[in-house]
View 1: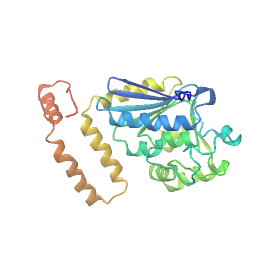
View 2: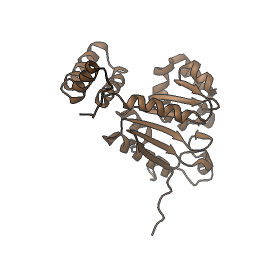
View 3: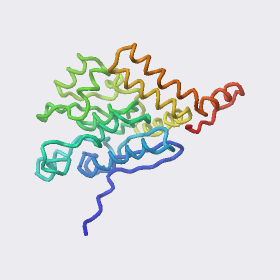
View 4: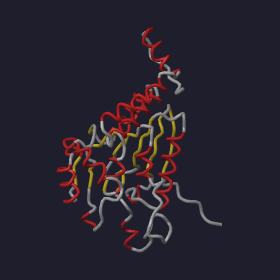
Length: 266
């Protein structure tokens, strides 16, 4: 009988908000095979649960995620995160791919250092709230690898080619205040306040019509890769079904009655 996998990713749903916590503080939440598999599964759970309207991703302890478990890799204990001897990996359920495809908004509460894979996880989220002592370390080229989990796609779109090139090619580390200046985080808060701030923002999002929020996110993602005329066409393809929902009727009634709407996601 095999021992069960350690619970390296915690999952909680409360008030329409799912909180996913990387839970290996003893090794600064570096990515192991169990953590990779559990994180992908929990992200899919949150995106598929009608009760969840917003997701928070954070880490336990003093780091958000210090990247891949390079100690285990150096000692030969972890050579392939997929768990197979193949040279290719099934990317459909890996966290960066799942994050990009998620329709629920995802807020990253960056509690500490986010290096390599950890930085990629953070920038794959829609919104980032960083603790003042948190840092982003793009140390890929310093370790002889390339950004394997999204940076080469996200960073040029988020901060422009020149800044993305500077960050990736130098492998430098950015403080939270530098991340704010570069446009890599939405807010910087005092240490320990990042999860509370992320939850307040998540509750604000969750109070809105969930189908409308998800459609808006879907279109924002599509807009990164399509010309404006095609985008307008897709906007109306999303808008017309929304106009038939009960949430639209509730939104109009609430506005007329000068009260907060009570959306049900239908």
